[in-house]
Image (cartoon, rainbow, N blue to C red; front, side, top):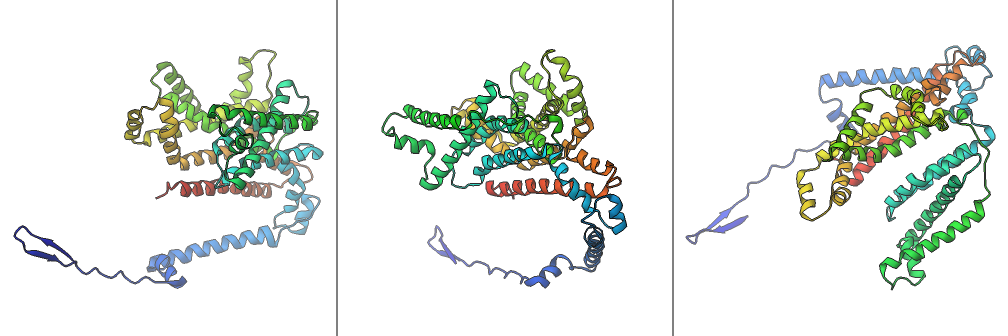
Length: 448
């Protein structure tokens, strides 16, 4: 009840209208089923029809893939003799190592495992909520990890440049995890802790970098004494294959696609005609042709533009082609995000006196990338699946290794089981990325 005094002095009393009580809601499982699946006779028919189709589908899959399946056999013939209508998972078990690692030497496969474990450990800090400096850790992963992983996978003689980058990569990796431990224990960054321990906290801020550089120098010396003479045998890239090669190409393409796409999107919106026209020509050229054409051009035409003494193997050429293709598509996704940011944000950044790069880095790009999370992840999912095209140019990725299992004389005719296994692997990869993107959207509160 509210009252208002009029100009004449009378008090006018407003009595709020009684609100209608909310309709009662059905609770429990039966209520949910009635409200969502059986709210009319037509919905009940559709529900029963869908349940019947699901039942017969899963029943047939269970009968073929589990009940009648053969798990131990030495050939396709033995599988057919044991169960003519069941799945021959014995062939997948025999070929499992090749499907995962390709033709990588058996006694050197620990290097592949170690490389991907290091990648997971390098990116693990992004899941720690209280940790600071996550952007810096991500930048170090992009800059240094490829050299460490590349030497782990390829091996061989190390020149002075590769020797330096590998030692720096190990040093940065150790420093990152020391920063994680210090942050989780003390709540301060490694830099703040080192500055406080060395007594530089009371000195000018510009001097704080010197104790941190000295600390990293000590770590670098320790790494050199530990791994200075460390080497692994050379493994030719022709032996790389399987899921290892698929993940390698996918990760490199994803890592380079986003920064490359951001650079191309900003270049396309540039006011400088030369930069804008060059970016438009690059983006439209790569978006106008299929990926298989780019791969063939990378393998056949790229060597013509290189010096005669400078030769790249087929894998490097394919990776370069996939990365350029992914960056061109990502550029349009990022450009859409930049256009979705209201003009008032640009004007507010100018009113605050921010330069172009500061306004982009602090205001515009964070908003644009947050809006574009679903499109960016969709692009990444398509990129993971498009890596199967490298099998056409002779690279033994997981798809080609799955095909090779059915072409082996002992297992000839084994086609369905490898493709089903590959579909499951791709589903797990893509579903995990999709779920992570949705969790990231909820964390950044972009969902409605």
